[in-house]
Length: 337
Image 1: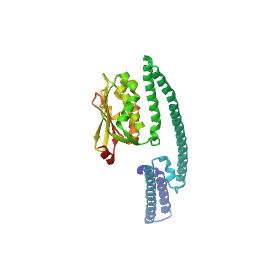
Image 2: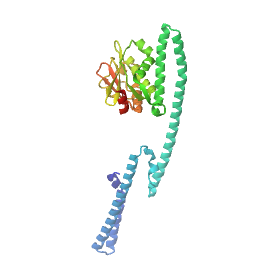
Image 3: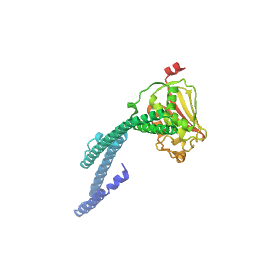
């Protein structure tokens, strides 16, 4: 509570008491009272007045500080009226009722927004599952009737499938715990599956693959990790330069297995590197590549955080290396060693 403003608000009350004091002095002197009696009465008045004001100020300050502390502890501060006590003063009770009404209205609006978001999320998921059927059918038709134009069509279908997957995982990323299954998986297998998912894109772009031998197994959700790798592969093609090279490798680092996805593309500017995982951030490269949305790496970071996978980007201006750090416990480390 602001002390200066509190006392400033009490100025009318103090002026009223001052005027009453002056009127009392005049009255007492006219009635023939001595100066000493008048001064004694004024001193008693002033002491009682100031004591009451300071006591009221201290009590109000304690109450306000308690409310501020309670609000600071709450994660949803609009619920302050649910945890605060009913005030003693009549005017404070009016503000208390207003807070209760505002809190109730806020809860109703939040509930409505959450219902709308859930309905929209369910609609998006249903739509994506429905659209996957014709995409799969078109891919089968094109693979059974190989011509030059069907190869082009397969590439576009692969992109369409990747974009629908991106939309699906974006919708589910808020509650990944409801959709993932953590189990032992081979890094080599998941890497080759991700490469197969993007085979037409890699062939069309002339990307040379270098996949080192990977004997490590980790515990995570294979489907989500595969999606993360698909996003990284798409970025390699999108930001390629000259003869593109995509390299997969692993290394041990204390209690972690590090999967490195490295390319020789245009790289990332040092100024942009700290922000590459921010939502919607495209940086200097995004201005050169019109297809950049700033969603791919953001989704990778969000999903990695949910799955407990460390993700980091390195670039020296030429080429980029994205590292995925999988934690392993001591037992798994000994068995794999």
